[in-house]
Image (cartoon, rainbow, N blue to C red; front, side, top):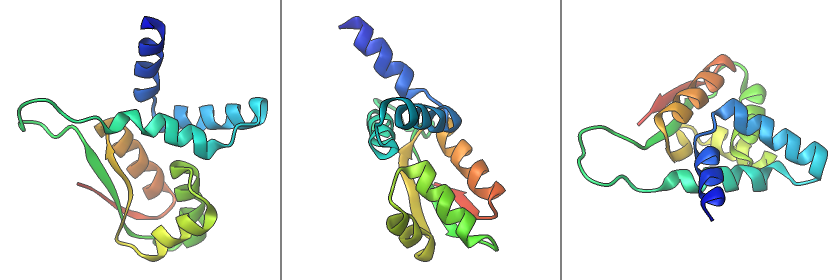
Length: 125
């Protein structure tokens, strides 16, 4: 049982790039769709913070605008969230909209950096 707890801890602490790499491996080598992997990895990260409100521990990644490369941003949102193309396009079209909610600071910053590199305007809350 301790091994599973350690494994869960490793999953929760993956960076965005590592999650994307894991999704690719699961799809290519094992035939498991990335959407299932993204949900499995993102799910445990939504745990609550115990105690003081001194430091924010959960962040929401908000897409404020798609910028000039809307198609690239839609593809990236699809990849980062594990959503389908239609759902990802819906998020981009309805900006400002949450891309991911309740993620760690490191994951939120990674998502923000990736989206900004694609030309999007992003805010962390």
